[in-house]
Length: 93
Ligand code: SF4
Image 1 (cartoon, rainbow, N blue to C red):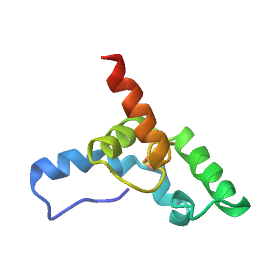
Image 2: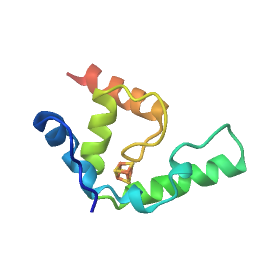
Image 3: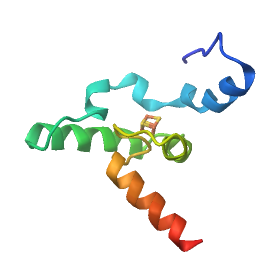
């Protein structure tokens, strides 16, 4: 388990879910596939497979949307997928 120290309490609370992040045990490169080719598609699929069984997936997704993270796979979605999903959810309200 990762310890988050040296940060103000509010920020620590905001990042607490990351202690349960399954991706800390995976190759970080797969969460940031580059380009559009067989290798990047395989990396994306592998990253999404990890996210699929991660207990904090929903919080991870929300955090990435709230902070407008422009790259990488968070919560099982690419940046483009997160933007599209967030827009769809916003339009439903
Ligand atoms: S949902 Fe995916 S990116 Fe987010 S913490 Fe879990 S494994 Fe990591």
